[in-house]
Length: 88
Image (cartoon, rainbow, N blue to C red; front, top):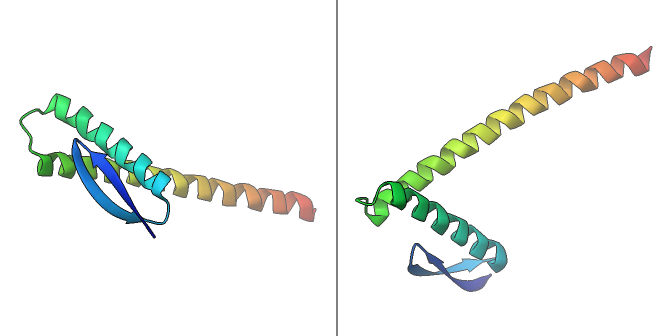
C-alpha cells in the first residue's frame, strides 16, 4: 500500500491505497460531485454534502445493480435459446 494525498472539496486527506492513480481519480470525482451539490445547496455543511453524495452514489449503484440483474437474466434467456438451437 502507498500513501497518497488527495483533495476533496478543498480539504486535504492522506489515504493509503493499492492504486494511487485510481484513488486520486475517485477523490476528484467525489470533489466534483460535492461542488455540484453545493451549488444547488449552499447552506449545507461538509458532513451533509457528504451524506447527500453517499445517497446519490448508492442510488446510482442500485440502478447499476438492477441493470446488471436485468442483463444477466436476458443473457441467461439467450443462452437457453442458443442451447435449444444447437441441440436440434
